[in-house]
Amino acid sequence: MMIVAKFGGSSLANAGQIKKVAAIIQGKPEIKAVVVSAPGKRFAEDIKVTDLLIALFDAVQAVGGQVGQVGHQTEALLQAEPVAEARQKVLDRYASILIELGLSTELLAYFEDTLNGYIADIQEPERLLDALKACGEDFNAQVVSHYLVSLGLDAHYVSPKEAGILVTDEPSNARLFDESYAQIAKLRDRAGVLIIPGFFGYSKGGDIVTFSRGGSDISGAIIANGLGADLYENYTDESFIYSMHPGKIARPHPIKEITYSEMRELSYAGFGIFHEEALEPVYRNDIPVMIRNTNQPEIKGTKIVSKKELDPRYPVTGVSSATGFTAISISKYLLNREMGFMRRAIRFFEEAGVPVEHVPSGIDSISLVIRSANIQSPEHLAGILATIQDKLNPDSIQVEDDLCIFAIVGEAMRENVGVAAAASRTFADNHINIRMISQGASEISMLFMIKAEDEDIALQGLYQAYFPREALATLAAAAQGE
Ligand code: ASP
Image (cartoon, rainbow, N blue to C red; front, side, top):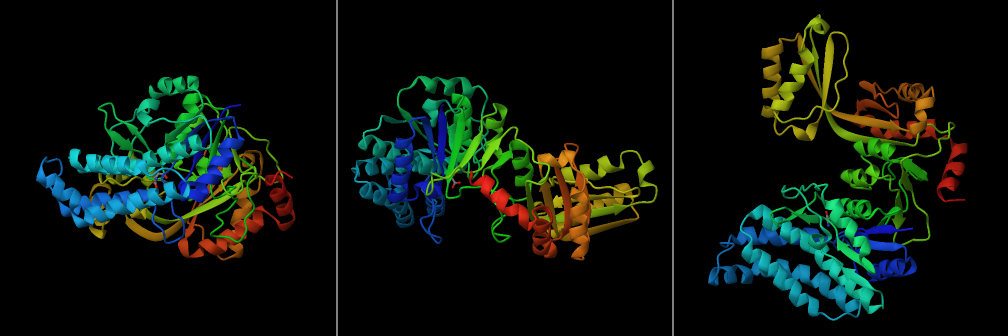
């Protein structure tokens, strides 16, 4: 059994948390590689190290020193008060961790040199930002590795370069090149436990490029896939994925097993425990993912798998909801006979850089559903509408904002009738008008669109409809492994 474990920022936020992580690694010799995030928040108002590094970048930009120039100008930039202050905040976080772990603070001088070296040498702002952001994970992996060695473990820091994580050259949005896997596989031959920083890789040109925010999950999945792990454990401060968002409904029950496909459908509408792109590498090789809690490692958390046993009594695994949608409805008499109408309508959005996410249609009308945030300004939308009016000559165009989409998800829905009926009944009972219904061919999810103001009441109603009180104890006990 070989495990790749990834520890998130809250699991490594301070020395106390790092000690818990070390105890988990010590107690599980199956863990071959550990992927770490940067130290996260220690308390609600705290600032993540990644954000401190972004603030350092902002300070460098604001001081506006001639980055990259040698001699006294670079020196002046490095010494400038805002830069020095921002850098010190980063170093202070590591200093307190090192001291509390009883480690030497020698590493700090090296960390400072690394930050200064990047600020002095990297001229393109986007590249400098990525190099600085990567330091959060990179320094933390070194700290964790030193600590494990101090406990007598055979631990080794392995940089993403050494690991062979080759990525596309898109700053802050890297994607892995598949050829990396052959290189990563070679890590299997290395002795001991490998400590690898998450969140970044190297471009073919040798530059540091980070994944999008929260991207250490992606690194963990990549390493798990590359090593051919039997299990990918993702440690955070949560033990489970819940059947509904715990912030939106009181005490939803935890899920014991969920498939990659269910997880993907649920994360479309707001299930954010895991980075969206992180499932892809493990999905490809069918490596199960276990959600684990660093603070309660004895709990077997939610497992994400390719196939699970279906229980026809509970066709729905989870319900997620997301607000922030806008629908643009276009009507035209005999629309269905007009060749290319739909395609052209979508194209006008594409040309304006706005992705269309759903296209529910009637006989003489279609609606294009978009994320409201993708509209940059009222003029932006007005421009698209004017083009539609001009080129398609519809009878009417209507815009409706503040919409909410519900995703009702479950593999067992495929063999079950009545799931849609239960949702419709719930909406009707609560006098909620349904603006759109859509079901994909896979039949594992059903989408409903309603007004955002009705989100809470709809969630409560749906929860009761799909998880009747008598079922809850059974479901919760199953998840707890009882
Ligand atoms: N430290 C990075 C972030 O805060 C990546 C991560 O933690 O996954 O986004």
